[in-house]
Image (tube, rainbow, N blue to C red; front, top):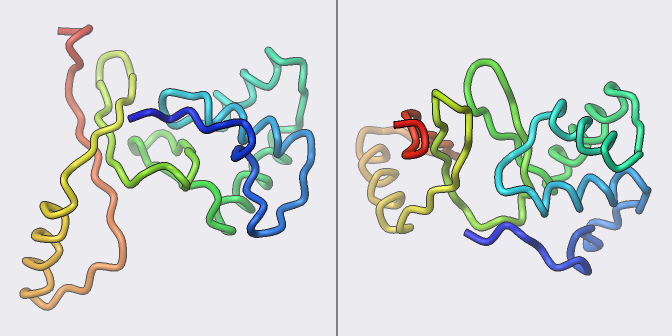
Length: 141
């Protein structure tokens, strides 16, 4: 899956988000990343680009963007929440338990629909889902 987003599409305008240096850099960093990023990852990248921001301010900005639907929180494991652009095609993740790398996994939509239909037959109403796989990647085996 190609995660790189054209520069002109990095900051969503349809929701009338105010452009700021931090928001612009946040969308740029997330669009260039091959995997979801944690707040600490983002802070390190910001520092390497000479953009220093308070951790609390970044948490607040990210939460506002999750609430507005521009970013998606990804619970990689019980220890960390990472973030990615919500505009990415629907996908899931594989997490290497050895090196902590994360890779996108795309399933055929019909397999997801079949699973949701089976659950609905059991009286379960699915509102959303997250599916992560854990194991050891080929670089660590």
